[in-house]
Image 1 (cartoon, rainbow, N blue to C red):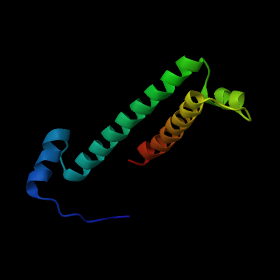
Image 2 (cartoon, one colour):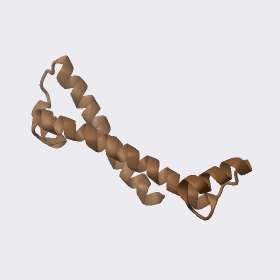
Image 3 (cartoon, rainbow, N blue to C red):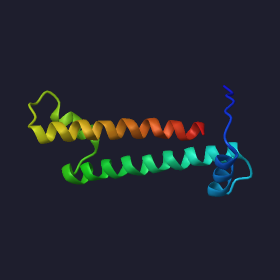
Length: 98
């Protein structure tokens, strides 16, 4: 899908300057990829925190707590961990498309 966007010259110049790319399109792609990589790192960090806390991987944790009553902290951790794992999978797919 092609979309035409009219950017002010100042923004075009900044994109090229920041990314050191030869054109705006490549610069925007580079900025998108950098942002996706930043998010990927963030979610990898969140996942590592929970893996260290519970000393298991997410799938093992999910099986361990399945059909059990969880305290507030465990339930909160579960949802945050699940969100990080899901977001990481989505980001990996998005990076392939950039």
